[in-house]
Amino acid sequence: MHRRRVLAGGLGLAATTAMTGAALGQSLPLPEGMIAPLPPAPQPPMVPPPALVQLPYQITPYEVHVFPDQFRLYWTMPDRTAWEYPIRVGRGQLYEEGEFYIGARKEWPSWTPTPDMVAREPEKYAQYAEEGMPGGPGNPLGARALYLFQEGRGDTFLRIHGTDDPATIGRAVSNGCAGLVNDQIVMLYDQVPLETRVKLYPRLNPV
Image (cartoon, rainbow, N blue to C red; front, top):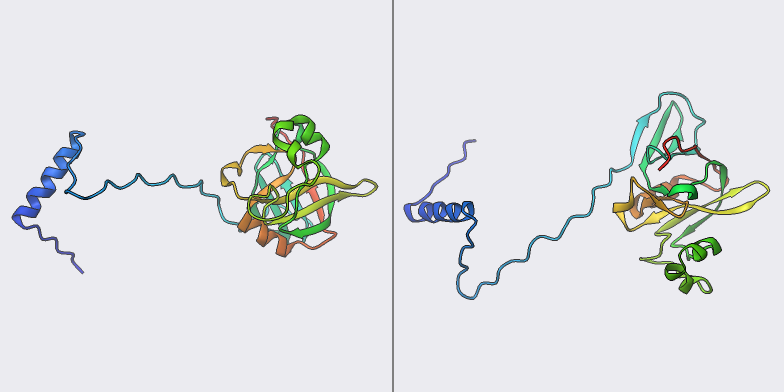
């Protein structure tokens, strides 16, 4: 189908004038009573959706594997496939490698900062040290949390959890936890049961 474009003389002249004014950087007068529109709000960063990917080698199915340098988390499946999630990780020495297991799972979890977090940034966390923060929008743990435990140690205070700040994905900015945007942690949470093995790999490129 051919699209026809019709410009009457007056309309064509108006369009030409507007284009000329814009090219010269001039502000065109608005019709009386019309309010200038606000500039568009900045768009949040785009976070890639989870993807089912082919792995280069076999990893035991139904485990969580975190690669900090790639800012990627994998929920492994049979036949050398895995669900790949973009994440953020712990900054500096707060990132902890090792083997863990999922010792607890919570929806819209409450949150209390650890003593170390309060000591590092009292101006930010001291107000929540006693009573914590109830679950809900704005809570640092987001919509879901998977709690990392170790044998003989119990709760490590490390979490795989949600965040409402997509700008942090792909960065080493957290207090040690792995973070996913909220809609994606909901998907991962529904896939990963209690007792699941979790492997956090060493950081090869120090930040």
